[in-house]
Image (cartoon, rainbow, N blue to C red; front, top):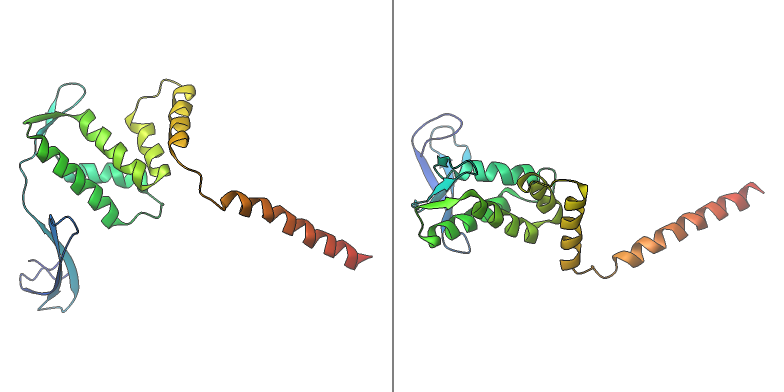
Length: 180
């Protein structure tokens, strides 16, 4: 494996770990020349279907393009690269399991939406706002309402928010007493 820093072709495998689903092996390597460490991922090359775009053009499946779209939706959110790679891996498994030679782009988009919905609400809404063509704000609001209906409220958050203003009032009262 070629070192990403000094481009030497010799490296030693320091550690190997399988992903939970067993489809990918993560390897930590050390370059024998510059002694720097790097990570590689190894997986079986699948035979992916062609992706049929909305205008009926056909493209080869591109994991980089898929990851780029997911990354844009997850930007500045607490979502790791590994989580995004896992979403891509799950979608690839789904595409291969379909056994089709061609798949509409909508199948890929729906899969991304499904996985992002489970991963992070904001990432889901960001992706949905680009992927789905909302005609107006009402369509977008309907999607948000649907998302909120399906999510259960987290216990304790409402109570914590309600207590915060009382503390601020107590500090204000204490300051006004000191002034008099």
